[in-house]
Length: 338
Ligand code: SAH
Image (cartoon, rainbow, N blue to C red; front, side, top):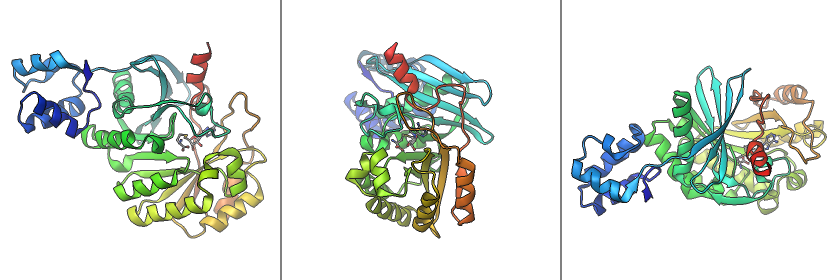
């Protein structure tokens, strides 16, 4: 059986062409799948009975399954473990803000990037997610909680720019099908320079977040292997190009690690790099990860105050889900071990 959930607009047109139907049926199929979110073909009431039967013979609409939910009673954060059709598991996290619900979605099963502080990369990359499997995270959580997700951050397990095509298809489906505004979608990357350049050419109005974690090449190399492939100068040049093309303010993610990137010289170098530029630094204390010697910084407030004093725009990311295994990848890892 061919699962239609996750096929693109072009895919919908092709399916209908194969079935000998006119192309407007493809547009109708797209609406049924993503705007009306039907779960079976009998719900597609503007399709003839004969067409519905033909579709049932070759296609279906399948979803993954939520197999575990961890909820933080203090801040309404819910973390979901989702089992995919092939038995692999991914995580997705729902966060409630005053402006609506935000969902942090995974883009791969595991991750090949090898950042020293990240639980998702332990065990390496298993496989890419399809566009449908990324979108399914929104479908499943909206269905389980009976809410509408208004913001999506592609910041869960995986490196989205290493799964470029599927992530672009996902963004198109989430935007034009599901109705999530481009400006409400954020893609976070550890810094794959050629793909950032390629993304700039797409000229989407999404938000781009770069995981920086240190303004120094030597330190970045130690904690983020990708920095050996693309150095910080190249990365920043590519970020500037992205800004010039899209006019979207850039965010730099910065997880404060004790003694590694929370020192006065880090404030000075960040100031030197970013002074006067339309950037925003998102500070967070490192989430502790088992089997890592890296410890969260106690200087988060000091660091934030110093940056602001130097005229650098920054916020401390509200830490959510403190009472659950919030650091991404930890729930999946645990489930694998037990
Ligand atoms: N691969 C992408 C997106 C997934 S990671 C990226 O690197 O941006 C999402 C964010 O969580 C990144 O900024 C990442 O560096 C950060 N992160 C990973 N492990 C963390 C931890 N233990 N504590 C705090 N932030 C962490």
